[in-house]
Length: 325
Image (cartoon, rainbow, N blue to C red):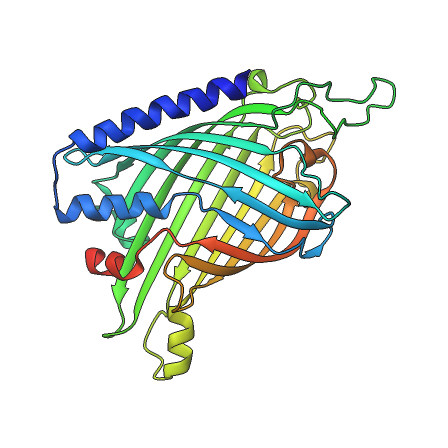
């Protein structure tokens, strides 16, 4: 029932957003375009993997995430609200190709430009432009069974055990784009964020297991840093991006020690290549190590996996450079 209410809410919010976008007066100011570019840079991307990759992921045909985003904004105040419903699937490489219980996430996020940033020491220490954001999010698997198969064995019920939690996320994102030469440009971004999972918002079984606080640092790189006078290398760098995310989980985690990196450390690294013959598709290689992000499967084991697939390209990089120079 909770999932149905969420879907209905997203549909109603989307209708309101489309109306608001239609009614909002046009404003082509540079500041507004920069702000929307930064908001787009923080959107979750859809992707699909080829198989299960290399590591301890169970044998898969694919893992896929569908992540559409809808937002409306205020051009004079430089704020935006984004609704981002996500559905993530794992299709097993078994007879009849069964699908694990989907992993559902719904984000409602408020973004606002930090106007003081550019003139402060932070603009000199990091990059000129920055925004902050706050999210209310829901994560579940749509099941209603007991978390444990039995109270005697305390074995987790991966078949239809209920997994559900709401959480809050807050972050700051700073961004720079510049031209290297006529044909080359560079984009750099840094984000710091905190996720808070209040214990009363957990479904039964998650308390003392899931970890209530998570802090992350994210670095994004597109294109070369400088002109290397090597055309082939420059072309490869220009069509490449690297995203590195490192995080730590705080709070009770089924007896894990406070400094036990094997349970608490999260490392997520993406390399993407944008071929000239695809406008909106990129190929990627991803290394992930840490708590499984796929709903109740966090309780099975820590993931350590190298995967391959395709993902969407949600930014016009050349346009971003023109705006931020």
